Image 1: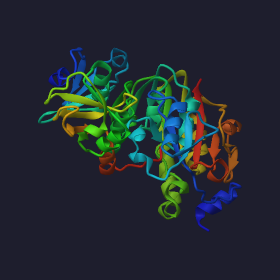
Image 2: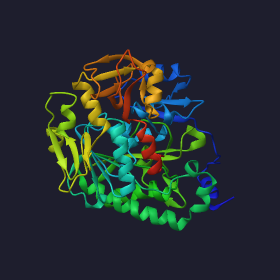
Image 3: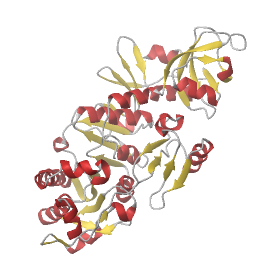
Image 4: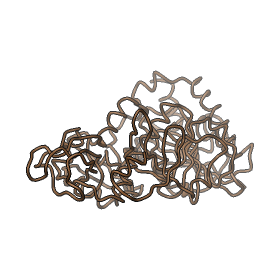
Length: 282
Length: 152
């Protein structure tokens, strides 16, 4: 047993590797979920609705769907169901800032609802974002290759899908070898800095969704607690699958409203590990 | 870029140029620009390299405004996306000009754009009719070159 599985047990979870079916999100700017389902089924692909997110399907295919015309035409995006939740939780209108946009799953999903300012710092990741915007035919996104901390304008809606340490469902056993508490703490420091900057960019009464694909409280609840302690923000209830965030963990007492956040444990939700919270600036 | 568009339609296209890249003019988006240099501005139309390289966004735009189309059957769709030229058996119907040398948008049976090619034979008479120029299978090649974390 490694340090992380011990920690999960301390959190009350006995984790296990699960097999997640490939999941796609329908690009509703190009096709309806019903029509896409029909087209894929005609090609012998098994298609099953994901019950807890809109416009998502589990698929089982005897060939690699990445080479299918429907993929190349941008009719869908391959995206874990958990990663589709933040946009549903944010419910943006008008204009949204996507702070960490590449490779573009959430950006292209946001573009279904409103105009998007997408920011990505790394060149190779920015290129992936460009390709996905082109493949999905997105017309209402402005992209900047820049450090998020250099953005200096105000927004009513911001998505902070923060860079994180990831989780074991993404990389398998390698994840346990690759990670250490030192690395988690380094990430947490960066996340606090990025979230602080995002809150400063938020208009009064504006809404921000903070998400990570980390299951480590240091990158999730502790980052939110830092925001609650240092800024005029509150957590809001969200309606999605997952367990409530912790109000006490590893000897730390946290704000009661932390139960409004959601943590998605793979063995419970059948998704990758994920954490989501919705903040409003007071 | 405008020369390329003129091969398919008389419709005027309003463009914004950023460096060597072209984007579709979008007044709504222009309201949102940050105080920094953007790299993407709405619909990407293509890039001026030695010659103009159109984007698939431009081909989609053209498909909305042009009649210069070859519609292909399912087998033609797959073959064209694998970079093959179009043969008589691939073609479902043709709209617009059938003159050799003309550029045509290649559409599937749902009228979705797959790419474009150049007429090299006589429809109904010769076997090879359209020489492949560009197809959406190119996204696969780009993804291989630019492998990034697909988690999100």
